[in-house]
Length: 248
Image (cartoon, rainbow, N blue to C red; front, side, top):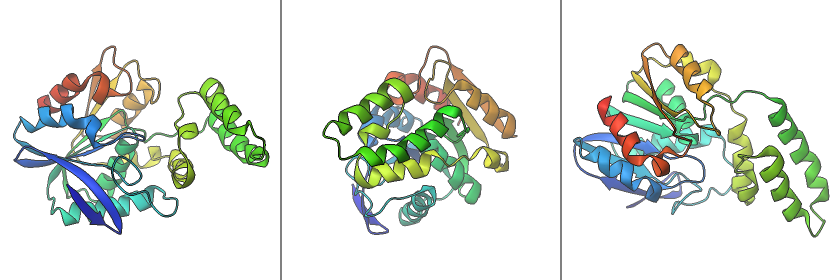
């Protein structure tokens, strides 16, 4: 399906009928990669809605770089346009950070929150400081013919686990805007019943973040999936859907 939200042509998919259940995918993902999870959840009596976030999948790329607030503004308009009320909300990775921010801002709309490997805790580390500083210096050498190769090699073998070298143009600046926004200090403001689902082998968002959020969110439950990594929707889709349905 297609709809225009705040000037952004937005693609989204719907599975099943029943209580509304909104899924927000992670950075670099899109709705097609959530089909298995969405179909399984829909069997529990839910109407599962999975949009391609702006800049991903078949949705438009924003004309200018966005930050978290731009995504939240778009998300608010999307929810309003689809007339979603008292809906279940699940966010994975970057989508988890958006889910946290939306739930804090509109607690009356979210019946239950599911955070799957949510990238909402952005600790300031030496590696991130190096990432920020080196990215500034690197711009001075963009004229070199082999610059693209060196840049990708640096992020792959030194920084590691970064989507930065694989994005271009507007989305590159958008990535930098969102990756440095730490929501850890606001996590305790969540009052909505929350289920935190995490793989204990997650190298992108460490499992320590899950325990931190479980401690900060008073009305929360922590579910650890043994042996699972970060990309739960592709590596463990049936288990992820099963854990969600067990806790709705």
